[in-house]
Length: 536
Image (cartoon, rainbow, N blue to C red; front, side, top):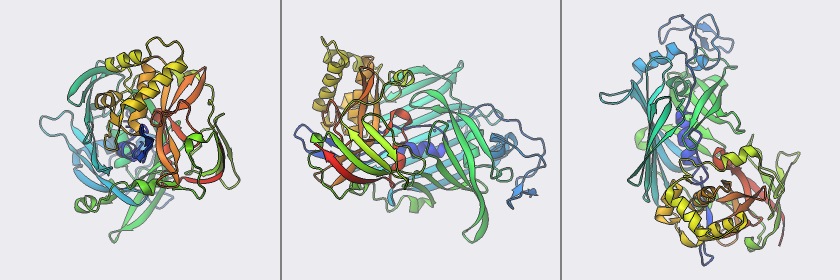
């Protein structure tokens, strides 16, 4: 997948990041004809100590200052306030739920999802299962995503098995994760080919999942917050996520006064919060990422009906002023509106200044960017699940393309040109890994970008995928969602675009995010651009 994906922060947000990351994309083929398409979170730590006061599932508690019932005399804190050990054990004994959701992208119904929770069946691992499956229609293809967890039913409620899948008309990637000797064994089946690897331990646990999906409203307050460990399934590493209560209230649902909680979740280093609206008893009513991406609770029949898919044209950020050939533009000034909490990346090639009205003055220049930090360099050299730069075929091809070349600049130019010339331009690939792209030799901007990133890393040249928008002057006058690449040259980040065969990206590339912690897609539905002037 392109605009890369995935923090594994909670069961529902896995799906949001995986699916909402699929956005429109611009690219060109060898003849210069432009086409469009897409571009693009585990849990826990140790179980918190629970208070020992027993109470029945529905017994009223002591009234809280906000008018909601509260459990016991002592106020629970941290993760225990959302889902104590006692609460988790009670849910495991009784939970058997099957909820369906419509997936809406800027008001268009792009797909649907199912959230299933129940006890494990005979022959299945663990004692409790949580599964989310999602179908999204885009570019004439049905893309299917699945995540399944099996957990222990006693504290610390560890995951005993996890399975992820992504299937499209072009290919499939199915991965099974199993704890083994303090690490995790991953068996990856990519278009029928099996690969096994060992990665760090998964820190997912059932209490964190239930803290977001089936929280105990009796023990929550408006001040409740928690931090917990997450496992990033793309980078195969542990991170930290944050969870907080944004609102506790009562709403009339189907004629019944019902307590609800609005929860907010994000990675600790992220800026944009993702929201969940959950009714008492553990029914998630709505999940939102940014201002334009929403999952809404619906019955099964309604959820699966009237799916129109992603309309690429409606995703374009239209502007009033024509710019002409974008590849001739060396500098571009614009005013940009982004979603609340989002911060535009800034550097020598993208100068950003916040305005009094909350928007940004932005000057984009076709020049090298900021200096590469040691931390970013290390991340941009790693082989990941999708940017699998350690794949033998990827390594061999990178060396073959650059044979005899001495400088990183020459090598990057050669790799960029090879990807541009050898990938068939198509909107229906929807491939996941760099090795898949190499096998099929087809794709749009996201496939071009993931392959170039992997080829560069295979030669120890730091590289990372970028997300953002790029100007299109042919079909619709405006900016379309896009993916391209940033590489380290002479100690600085330099943007290259393999979809356009640009060794330095033209100045209509508005960068929103970088790498696999990218939050750029949070701006879908809210991004606005006003052109000031271009410089050719």
